[in-house]
Image (tube, rainbow, N blue to C red; front, side, top):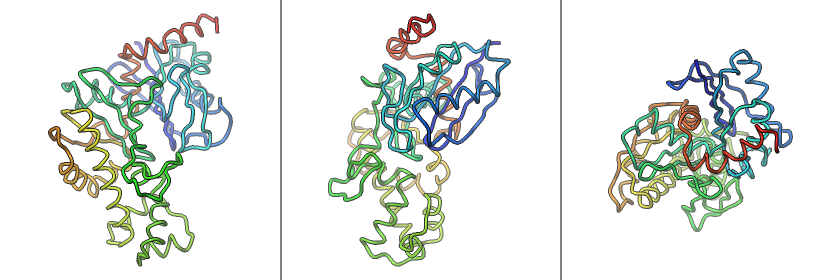
Length: 332
């Protein structure tokens, strides 16, 4: 039996799965290294794969890494990611050398879109958007059946769409008023503190953040469900920013379907889904598509990586194929 290795490399967690063409057989999850050098993350993948599936590696055909970005897709590496301290690191070269297999590296959200086309609800869709709402915000887009990647593999870094021109809040990348500023889980504590100070909101959560206590995105949603005034204001901005971003993507790409995934969204569908859809409708001029949660759940990223390995898009093969060949032949 032939196997594939699918890697979903996120800012918080790295998930690796041994797969067949039909789906996931077994998976392993660990915390993405937050310290080290440009080879630390690739080495952590190699160590995990060798420890877990050493006896099956000879039957692995292809490996795919669906990674946080931004990427230099020509080199298969992450060039500067704002959400982890190891900002720039190699993936393709050390993994091909270490595994002696073809390894393709692609943006995680772009891969997830391809995963929806092969394994999810977009099997019969030629024009659709996959959106992730998690630690950050990102997307993948298929237009007329073609997976869009961009010149460096960074198409659809939609988290950095400006949704508030007057914002004083900085994104993790340093920009002002970005969608990810308001809807990235990593930024919600800063948004909460800013609003508590700027708008003088009086609530239990406001008193906590103003005391200097550390909170996380989950706390904001928990307090929202309790009716906390500050939490409700933070989630209001989350919904407004996300509806504006989705509407912009719909107006730009004219999709028939928008699929939303990501841990923050999937864990808070009861809070986010209906308000986002309702507000999005008010800003769409090209025709409102269906908007639905991914049915692949937390495995959307892994299925994206698997889809890239099983049915590698031609444009990705053209970019990374020659480099992979040179490494395997020992000429690089």
